[in-house]
Image (cartoon, rainbow, N blue to C red; front, side, top):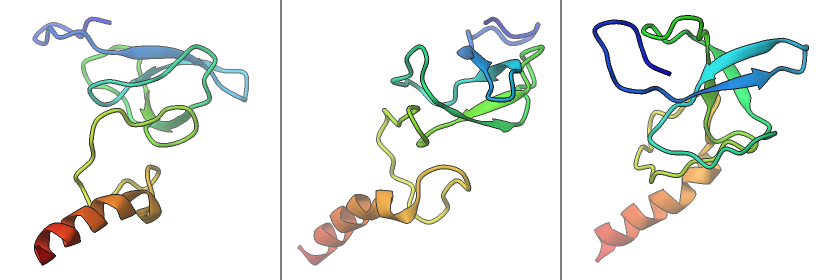
Length: 100
């Protein structure tokens, strides 16, 4: 989808059929994704300012909407996204480098 006037980059959106029988548009966050047709996703509110009619965002790290890019963030994490157990491998890599 193309954004409103001053912006020009194409935005990735998906038409989603919710469990309460609503059909909405949601923005796909991040650089890239592994999303397929008929995938289960978690949707949270929050509109995209330059996309008319898009009022929801898809949450990465829940259900079938997984991360593709490498994550380096440890301290502040998303409320709806990955938990500390999923970051455990990142922490181990950091401590291994400090010991050497």
